[in-house]
Amino acid sequence: MYEQFYNLREEPFRLSPDSRLCYDHSTYKKARSYMEYALHRGEGFIMITGQPGTGKTTLINEITTEMLDSNVVVSTIECSQLEADDLLRSTVYRFGLAGETDHKSQLLNNLENYLVRLKREDKRAVLIVDEAQALSKGAIEELRLLTNLQHANTPLLQIFLIGQEELLTLVHSPQLQQLHQRIIATCSLDSLNEQQTEEYIKYRLDRVGWDNDPKLDPAIFPYIQKFSSGVPRWINLICSRMFLQGMIEEHHKIGLPEFTTVIEGLAKEQLLPPQVQNKMGVLLSEVNELKHVSKPKKKTALDKKVRLSKKKGDANKRKRQEKVAKELFTKINPKIASQSDKLKLKNLIKFLNQEEIADSNIELPEDLSKLGERGILAWMQYSQEDISKEAQDIITMLLTMVNDNPQETRH
Image (cartoon, rainbow, N blue to C red; front, side, top):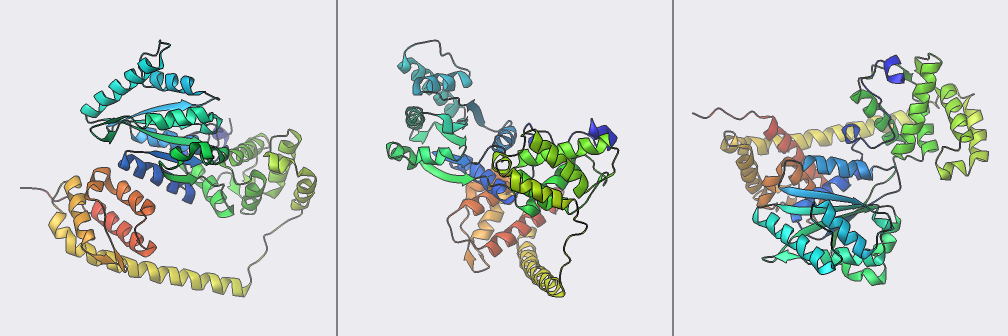
């Protein structure tokens, strides 16, 4: 509805997950990097947790979409208090296999034969278990046993556990100690802070063609974060309602008065986050006070001086990093400029492993070239090696320079 009024290509604040409008905040990037690195490892468990609405399903959709054209066969199970036998049968069905038998051994045999066949075709299988906190301990243990399936000393199945915070408690229980030992990485998707909330809203709007209509008062963003608890799903609800209200009243600017009207309406409908709804007596009084807020507090001269000093320091640091990256690019580019993308990355990795960058000795696995630039970045973020943040930034710049340099024509 409101997208036509504001000339947007589509609705930017749907409540259903949409990986096309995904905003890469810090913990989302980290979780995605963990999943990508785990795919590179091809073994064990990886666990992603977060409260409802923080982007877990969006992350799954993004990863599975990227793997459509790869050699990875992905199946996803959304759990609803499954027991061990039901989980095994669901896994068999999700991989498109026959499961009409009462014999567990037959189910396991069907699954193992299928996984071995994938291995011989140079493919591998990944099982993503969503809402895994609802699984019983017996079902979790069944998943561990599935990771025992091997062919020629190579694991046949890798499992991603996705769930709410309760999953952490479940996995760390004494009965599941063996599974805990097989988790190669775990990450939690956090809620957004004030700055990230503003960036999230503007990112989604920019993706659908927003041309500053309606104009958004900067004063509303901290309060959107506060009343949504920084959870993307709640942010979407508040913003969607603000834009709808703006369309109804034909507003081309949304500020604190429009925001407070929407918040009061959502509070009456009991649609705000529970942790906010439970404190509505205090928060509603604050909402009423917001109506009298005209301008944000002005920054002092000292605030401005500190901010300018930080900007200057960051700029100098970036210039220094760019200089190092350019020097490295000048050394390696003549040797790889005419090569194919895969060979170029392979030789770039060899080159980096011979260099000392920002006092860090780089030891990148050569087969990372198969995963492309993103695989290298994911490995650096996840790796336990002592690679400084400055070295990572320099390598990122170098990768950008290599990718932006057009491949020379071969004769």
